[in-house]
Length: 288
Image (cartoon, rainbow, N blue to C red; front, side, top):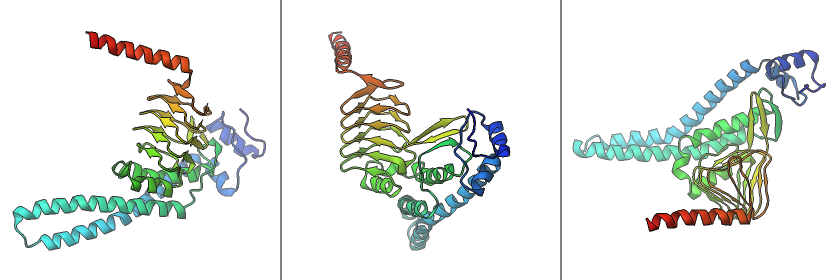
């Protein structure tokens, strides 16, 4: 696939040598041109900057927890040793939650202050347009891989997801922390996201990146361990069966049932046939 003619010949030649199959939009400025031309260097620099930002965020989250532990140790200094260590252990446990809840407050602030306004995009990883997506997810993963499992299915977890830009309807039930791109995700009223569902708004490979919103309609149900990729729209009252995978571009109509890998429409007759088969297996086991 040819690159856009808007790029100069040297940039086209360099981009084609790295990812010859990718069509990039025209560069938006000098920084975008630099990132495209020196992709590996730019990637390494972005990682180091993100590590520094993550260290600052973690440090701010740890500060009140460390203060609390210091005060606890001072208070416990003169009590019986048999009581001192269990109580200090309890204080360490509390400090963990203090740091975790502080992180829930710190990360949305960083996400607001930094350039994390993610927009739909099709092109190479090595572009300026991919940078907000990279920073946004890097910040979000600090919580996803540390404290988010402890607040999933609580008002604290929903509040954090909303603070990161995720649109969540009333009484929505989100039982997973396997989320990416929260600012491009929409979950409607009374929707149910089952346990360990993978929910994100991007896809790609081989240097190619597509960022596109994912929308789950009101009263839709996403079964356990299902995967919903970017550029997917699930209609009102629809159902995605457990362990199914909705590929990019899927459009699930209202009240439809989809299942499989990749997920496809399952008609009412097919669903009834599946239910009859399941009931038959169960009855056969009972008779044995």
